[in-house]
Image (cartoon, rainbow, N blue to C red; front, side):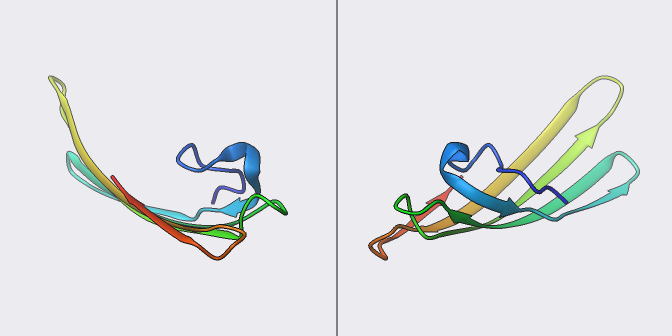
Length: 85
């Protein structure tokens, strides 16, 4: 579990962020799922929530992965911002 800001968030503006992760490995494959919740400092925003996943295959000759993430932020005026990657 991470108790520090994740690189996808505005690290200097977060008061705190919690990010538990779950990874399952089977043979050459691994699947990672993470969730994040946090709160911005006063005046910078309200909350942030995110979810992401990464599927990875590693062999001796190559490494292949695909990842996806979704993030929802609420600013100090209650405007919602959603980003996906």
